[in-house]
Image (cartoon, rainbow, N blue to C red):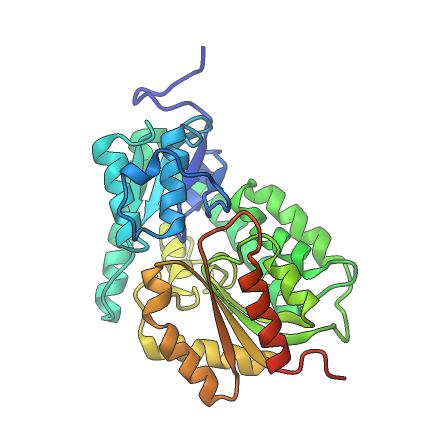
Length: 360
């Protein structure tokens, strides 16, 4: 018989997590792998339609479908639901209040004020609350194990930032580079580190092929999107996706304080601005434009999940700031199709033609 805790959750099972950001260090300290749910594309809708309004985004819709089918509870001890948007918050209520999916859930709330002092206070209070909930369901988190988890995730952040910053590497197509960077969504952090070390052992391409562009949005889906970018003579020069670039601290991380809880908070505060977390709009515009200029991009591609409120909120402003900086852009909308629709492929081709990606 499968061992269970006093709260009835499987001992040693994974922690499932919805996008975008939450403190994974606690699951690591408990010896559990975090499995993240980013989609997935092409999931047939059977039961979820009865639980969500028609305007729900595909990410929320597909996550609920997986929960109702029992896919999540089959391998996870609990579900973490960050307060990314109203749709994700509604999904958390359905899991916690209505029992959808038959799995316990905990929430992680992001600060929603722009006041620096209030943000800092709220974040640290929320981390303590989140730790208490994790311990209630999965057992005590020892401080020494948490400190080790913080250290190894810090190392992973450093390597991921380097792999992203240094660009294409010999024998590592961009599709494979992204596969390595996104492997954090399904692997133990130690396994993810090994993959990144192998990738970083390859030499950096001195003259990478393809016109550099900004890739922005939640996640580079449907499948084949990165291949279509390459086929159109382009490559990602600056990543502004929620699943990769916005969750890797790109500047120097704050020095460790010796207090793992404080280090987790400071790591969170060092993340790039993301519309799924409340940020000053000017800070976000400055971040994207500065990244675009540093990478010498010639265009930008925005991949927006249908009906995604966080992404749509500042899309016009970001595109306008890039336009002012001389960077044209194209927007494609995805419903997380199983394969890349011809309409999206055509828009990507149009961007390549617009910026002369195939010009000598």
